[in-house]
Image (cartoon, rainbow, N blue to C red; front, side):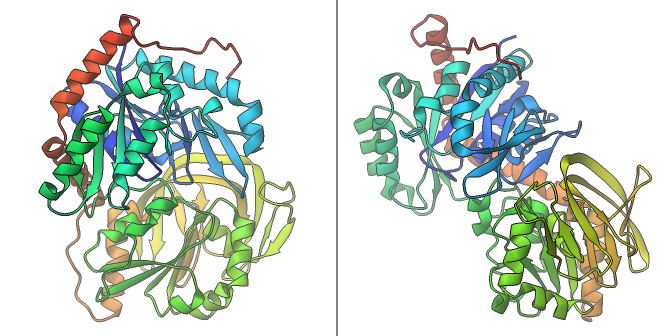
Length: 511
């Protein structure tokens, strides 16, 4: 079996590639095709843990779910997790390889990376009938294209036609499309089978003259115009997606403040709150913005030492210490590590700073950053007030915490996790609030304390599945899927007949 591929590229970051790929994964699966996602190289701090405890990009986890399959590392063989201004942790097939500078990765790892990607593609190609490939940023990054591993190089390796997605919501969509196409080589331009205009608001008849002009000028068909879709319970991949957490519900009964760390990771932990009818979620960048929320969340961090210093420099340590005992404060992963008496980094895992004083919310808690990385799905029983509640989640951390406080979660494997003292708690469990029974109790307990009646809530997975269905429906209504199907078939015939070259890497470097 050889999978029929299609690739989604964008005119810029956050154009909508990830959701377009997820939509096609769902549609192909609905049509009965055994479908998988693929992103050769992903740069993101929001990651996903596979069933076998490996780390990949969160978007590929979402796309695999859309396709109704379990994600594995072949779907994202290389994950780049930025840890500083010019350095990043390189994760290969779900496990950390090393931290590299941008130039080092580009010059020294390129050939090996190309081999890793090609071998992962071969495994997917032989196991599925359709593969939806996602690019990154723009294929017209002319300063990077001689050694890129994620856009047209991958289209060439896989023999995939390309659909170009452009974001009209930011303006300049015609210039973005035309400029992108003009900067491509003739060979790469031949791979582009169509254009999707994304995030449109307004009267489509006013846009039509522009679409007609675009087709005539570029010679590339417009496959459709997607409307701006509000309220999807489908997580974002990186910080460009933070705009959806706007805190618009000014009159909400429960106010949730998330401290916006500069190196925040896996902030998708808070997504279930966004879809609760009585919750307002807002990111706080200044202590003056904190106000008097019902819940304060310290999210995960890719650089705990640096983000801890940021909190102190901006006075958040004083705000948190003042709120302790009165406001529910929840720390997750890196946020939990910061809550103690100290954090040490003797092996310089994250920085040159060997140790730092913590926020002091747990006086007996100390954390040592380690070179070994824990990546695992976890489950257990959480204790809050008078209740024991089932929870699931996943762990991604390079550190060990010890304390004499009460542990917050009894893990199913017999271990314990986190710490709790009154209304202050911390855990290594990402995805904790996706556990419905715990979230329902937690929020309704706040309502009870405020003299408000409980509200009916929906299971988050039901909301999520409804979002996949809605995404598929909108895509079917607004995109010419028959044209995509025909062009995919025609393109593949061209590859098979040698009109377009499919270039696989012959490198035999070890993975």
